[in-house]
Image 1 (cartoon, rainbow, N blue to C red):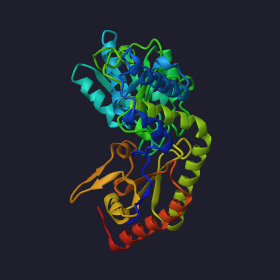
Image 2: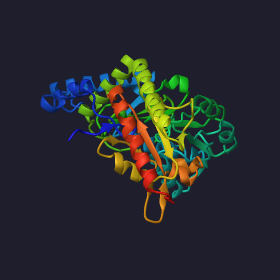
Image 3: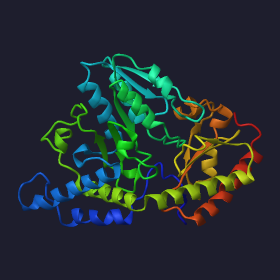
Image 4: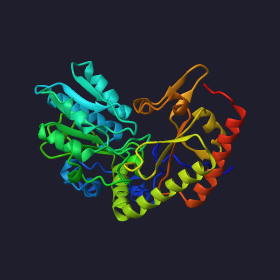
Length: 385
């Protein structure tokens, strides 16, 4: 059986062959601890700092401003909890949005158990935060703003630079979750103006279990993991050199052919969208029409159930659902709810996301599979909800 066409790059990415290659030596030969002062620690230490430099070059920051983590979730948790605990004597108020990744939302909810307060900003029909609404939510005790760079479900890009100006004017630390944007759109920390930025390795063709957190010099942040003082003292524990080397190489590849890959993803995503919409009616495209990730296509098929569409295409295409339909309920994603997508549309929402390995032939093959599945379900079901 042929493997399904993979259109879920926002979910995770395969490890790029060029990323895998420099990792091999840390499976086969170099086992030393980078903190060791003897000969066996020398190569791992050099590789650790080289990877830190590669990540820093992609984000346009200093190497000393990069902390390696276990992934995007840890980076988000470290940023939010770290700022909260380090600044609890200054204030206890956090501002975020209703469309954030659970790694941000759950971190905020956890802190609420300890006396912190969170304002969850609404978004418009495209999933964007209004900077004026954000500024109006600021209080004297506000210590942190956390708004994602680009949404993982619908691809909408937030006005990060504008929000950063507001945060700076009010002397508030600003964090952005850039797990979905790194490698797809520019993530220059100086242009964005952020104090903290989260990176997830498995979204950029590096291994799972590795990530990074940009911490702007001077940002007050509590330790995440206490130990022997690795990662500039912020995160104790022996570094995962093999995965770190992979993340560094992945960042180098992004820098090498960023514009080429960005244009390829945009072209293939548009080809998929036009092909589907040419043959089907009652389709809604979710997310901002212009300020959107080049690889993300979020479509709602009116009157259908997303899990039924996935069942029809599952042997041929790998994609993600924006809702799960059960016998008497429909669980719509919190992002679509925040965007006020009507249930008759939201229930039939799928996310397709392209990537480095996606080919035009795959898109051409995917279109009729999706179209036929939707037509089959519409012919067979007169009413879903």
